[in-house]
Length: 235
Image (cartoon, rainbow, N blue to C red; front, top):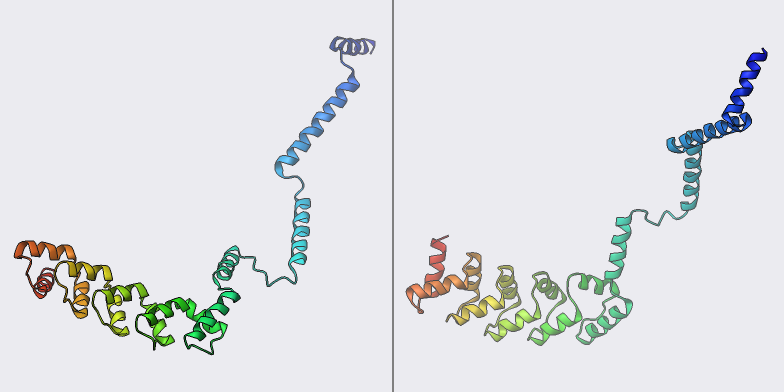
């Protein structure tokens, strides 16, 4: 017994460490390892679930009564874009004043918004009327706008010598005829080309470069109808 006590004392003495300090150090390391493990694994799952429930309940309470606010970001963006595109009250009032001056009365703001959504503005109507269509109706203005007809296109066709009806303008644009194409055909010597021929030429894909090539092969005086027939037979 004395011998074991003596050895134990010698071991303590040889180690140079206080046994109490050693015990506390080992306990602290064990507690630290446990804490680190909890942090790595997410800690107590019951506590996490409890916090999630609290957050959900708080969120439900917070958003109660504001259901009219969209939580969908795409809906919010679309609504914002829609609001930005809408004309202001001041703009509608000024448009209405010009419309009344031109004889288009009894239009409310909804009517004006509908016209603008179709591409019809007071400026567009004024420009078309200035080209000789003073009896232009709102329905005709919408038809022109829907056919992507601009007052510039109409003015250029008039400059090229065409006296067209609104229906003829619409037929030309729907066939893909432009003032630039018409002008190029004129420059190649076919100044008497008719609207019907222009429509046929566009539909068969007759380009001005092909006309130039045939003129080089057959001479400048090759009739336009021969050019059209050549294009049809070589499609």
